[in-house]
Length: 230
Image 1 (cartoon, rainbow, N blue to C red):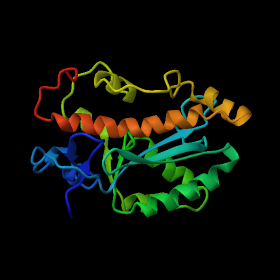
Image 2: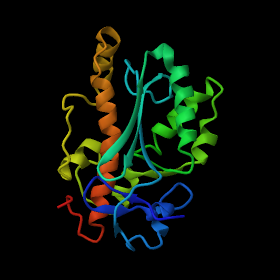
Image 3: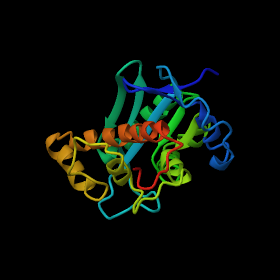
Image 4: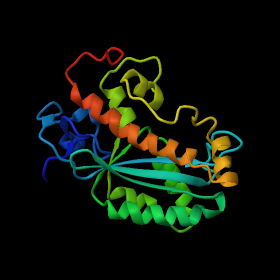
């Protein structure tokens, strides 16, 4: 398989090491993690993924709430992105998940990047999809999942908080949507239902894109001491 390069228009990052960080193996058994990290300039086979749920009564620990929004973001040649985002009413969950299953199959064999997706996104989508006869467990098996949250922790980065926004802030990554979080997403999402406000969609896109940006940033200096990302 050719080397994979993550590129946002400046220095590309060789993501071939993700073979060792996918769900098929422990991040503690990387081979060649620091080898050929920097490289010339192309991306292929990397997709970042994030979901949102409509959870008016708090965190859906039992996967009881519908998936209403998700995005897939794929870096392209030079300076570009392919961004695919879907948002709909709670009643549209079945259609949203059927569409998602087709999209994921289209990216078969890609490195699927999430932020804490091993504990939330993948399992949640699998459970909700089963309500509609969709086998996401099988679909995710044809991807190579890389949880960027676990990667940050494995690298030994010392931060007071490892939420995605906290890590982005430590890395100097800025967002366009500043007043939305997982805690108030439900309220902002209601504005989409009532008025067609696309703020929740853009927030979700930034979650997916931010996951890619974190991956790029930490791969640029894997040999540095990572105390507070400094």
